[in-house]
Image 1 (cartoon, rainbow, N blue to C red):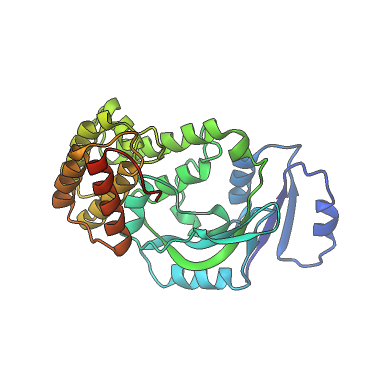
Image 2 (cartoon, rainbow, N blue to C red):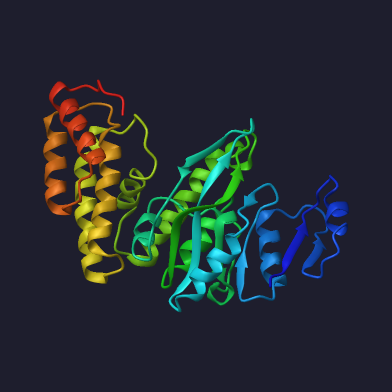
Length: 314
């Protein structure tokens, strides 16, 4: 009980011959007038769909045999839930599968706080209720993060989740668009993240606050000691803003923030004892649940702070 809508976006292989070789009235085949690109094609697919639920599968990705069944059961079991995604594994150019690089288990309360820093949803692993779509679906100006932009807007006041079961395999190509246009991908990802600050806290943050927030998104060994005072102030500010507007579950937001802080503090260019003292103040305010892995990271930061250098590779 499904429809399989295929849009050929200017392929130059035997796609059309293969599709037309199947005699199944559930298959609906369309062609673009040349290569129109991903955003146009995804929007056309949505417009052609007649079902209440939509699931994407990019042409080079795989789905498990029971993917539709599992996700349909989840979506129909809750009137509040409008989107469900799953964990996924990747397949490299050499044919190697990697199971741990897209593994998540995020419930309806956890997903929004994680969205503030990254996109845990693989498009080929998502299913959602068509009625939950915003007026603008996939938007130009965000490639290749137009999917991230859509999920954020769709779930701004609605609920979604990511389940730990793997129901998709997506291919990684060394020559993929995201790799060839890494700067565009990074800039548009950052735009989606800053958009969220505006959705949740309109006009309540500065450009400097946004820049500090983005320093918790992508980590490098160029993180500076000079950022730490402003970072500490931003953490307190976003907590205070959330206490006023109640967009995020307080304990969840605090946990996510602390985990991002640890990652940043492990990648500072220099260290002194003030780094660990700042970490202690932040931990006291955030009150995170400390797993063995988080304690290990804290111990490493203490060691770096005392020796003023990085000597453990985490």
